[in-house]
Length: 135
Image (cartoon, rainbow, N blue to C red):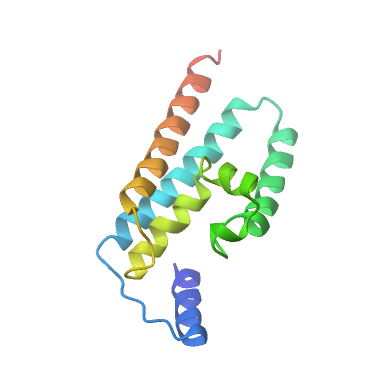
């Protein structure tokens, strides 16, 4: 939490943004954390070898930090990569979190919440299935 607050304060100062923290900030942060944890746990349960899981997670971290539309608008991505991110949850996580601290920057927040919630449910179902088939 201190890192999030410090980053928001620095961004507001650097770019002259007016941040308006809405009551949706808490549910947005909780849902985002739950989704990321659920996806990570599902990967850990569904992939049998921890070394493979580690390699995939490290590759995903690299890709998410550099090639995801969190740091910049999705319109700057090549069309094929933008289409990929319209299926993955990272773009929608960014939208949900952006909408919780700004006004007017994000449109169709309900879709973003729905996609993040769907990924959370799918990851929990995948985890339950993987744990249930273990002996």
